[in-house]
Amino acid sequence: MTLPAAIIFDVDGTIAETEEAHRAAFNAAFAEAALDWEWDEDLYRDLLSVAGGKERIRHYIHGLGARPMLAPAAIARLHVRKTELYGDLIEDLSLRPGIARLLAEARTAGVPLAIATTTSLPNIESLLVSTLGEEAPGWFAVIAAGDMVPAKKPAPDIYRFVLDRLKVRPDQCVAIEDSRNGLLSATTAGIPTVVAVSRYMTHETFPEALSVLDHLGDTGQPCHVLSGRAPPGGMVDLATLRRWLTT
Ligand code: XBP
Ligand code: MG
Image (cartoon, rainbow, N blue to C red; front, side, top):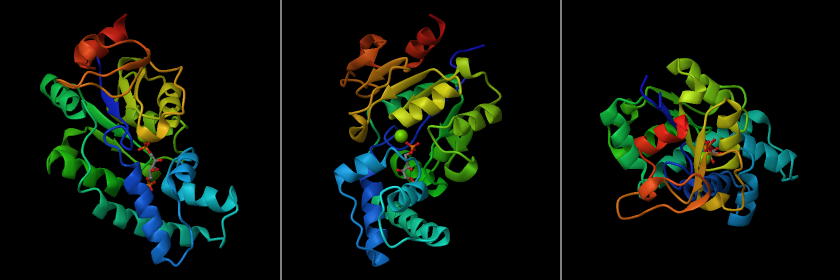
């Protein structure tokens, strides 16, 4: 058996720094709905502890006391509009360092690729197409998203869903994540995880990770190790992942 048996990527913060586009889309949807809600960066950093857009709005109302109180159907409608607006905002986003390189290397080697994210399905397709091209969604054997499972990250459901579809052992795969919620979701499912910390997550800690890096590293752009194992040559590649799974 060739290791890793699969590489499972998170999306937001991992493939690209998407959260500013999400934040702008939430605020635009609020304004269109004549809500006087404005999520600034500090508030949004706190709100990101709740994974999933609908869940985040619900927490803003029921956890933080925002008013008016919206019924679940109104939250769902607001979130549908937020998703449409997000699709228009991501055109200029670029991939984080090392993502295109690692995807290409895995595809050449025939290592299965998958996605495990809390974001909504249309957002993944738009991001993959705008950053990697029309064919990119087809590179992934499984795309697990949003409401496909009952409980969002940090619950392990989304990673277990992927493992079940891929029919692989968790300890033979690697997950790539950017946040503590994502790390807990993957490691609770038994998957060794590399964390490439994203800009909104620099205050978090990741003791369960194989390696915590500023990014995955690329040619001419070596990564820096924040804790855990160091990839030789400043780049997380297949050989590095294989070594980390076996030694
Ligand atoms: C990050 C998230 C997402 C987005 C919002 O998830 O928490 O919920 O912020 O997306 P991940 P939606 O890093 O697991 O991709 O509004 O579509 O839910
Ligand atoms: Mg993420």
